[in-house]
Amino acid sequence: MDIQIKSGRLIDPQNGLDAQRDLYISEGRIVGIGDAPKGFKAEQVIDAQGLVVMPGLVDVAARLREPGYEYKATLESEMAAAVAGGVTSLACPPDTDPPLDEPGLVEMLKHRARNLNQCRVFPIGALTYGLKGAELTEMAELTEAGCKAFSQADAPLTDTRVLLRAMQYAATFGYRVWLRPQDSFLAKNGVAHDGEVATRLGLPPIPVAAETIALSTALQLARETGVTLHICRLSSAAGVDMVRAAKLEGLNVTCDVSMNHVHLTEMDIGFFDANCHLMPPLRSQRDRAALRAGLLDGTIDAICSNHSPVDDDAKLLPFAEAEAGATGLELLLSLVLKWAEQENVPLLHALSRISINPAQLLGQKMGHLSQGAHADICIFDPEARWRVAPAALKSQGKNTPFNGYEMQGRVRYTLLDGQIVFQQ
Image (tube, rainbow, N blue to C red):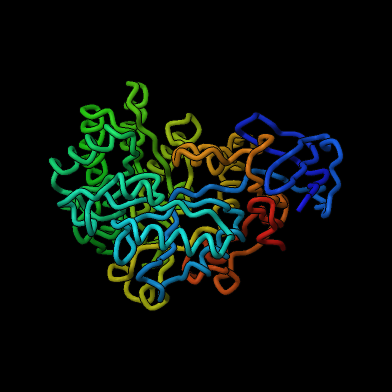
């Protein structure tokens, strides 16, 4: 279908574009910006007056819970949530049941996602079989099946010799390794940041050292091997300093932060609010300030939703027993806009953290509005205000720390390959 998106404010961080222009789409591709291509006749016109037109959001951490955890969420529900949040591409961690350690599982997931045709799904393959940290998976076969990187998700890999071999192999063939740094012994049974709130509430703590010790190991092995290393869900000021130093050194390392940690701290746990039971845990105000500074100076490359839908029963338990996780796909854009407003960050720079930057982390040529690019587009109203109500969320997981918060910025249209997959 030939579509004209008329009079919108086009924001494209890749090309440094922030201007009111028309956008022209044909056969799933962008064919014109500003002026219509010769002979172009629009079959549909979208009036984007007063709206922002940007590349579809790219989220590097969204658990879809399939296969194995359909009682928490289904592919249908979570992809509907994705497009409602303007997300057109997402990376799925490998901690499904069974884990994504076999090509057949990866192909099945991609096939299911293609049939739904709402959002692009990029599986992250398991680094070790069963995520048990013992035997390396067949990375070549998993890459052929569609995996874009390899990770342990939140499962520990305590044998540094196995991790070294994994990085050596990945470096040899140009594969990406994604790690969430957490020492499993220091973090054992912990549920909250090792600070005054955990002490006052009597919650088992997770010290910052759990992150920095694992991060130090990962960075040292990356130096040894030259692997392309991505650090997932950085949470501490000390961690930000270590990644900043590694980048200045020239190490091939990138990192992301969860939107929850950009806005919340340990104080938001309040009186045992299980919605704030997250992994990594919410840390101190100083840590949050450092994460924001890392976003501003480019140390942190991307903001992700860390979307982890949890069933209601698992959240109704006492804080220490409740399952960690929160829904986030539908909140990502609004929370990035909130951060940009609070820190006085131009939209062009803020939106790069959820478009072109995460696309590059996945090695994908998307997240921009260049002529000839896939017409994956998010159109949103930057002034629209709405209140987070769990019942109104399309995700099957209704638990979020932002329940009742007022948000700014509402998605009006989401297009995937030039087809409208969401409209409000």
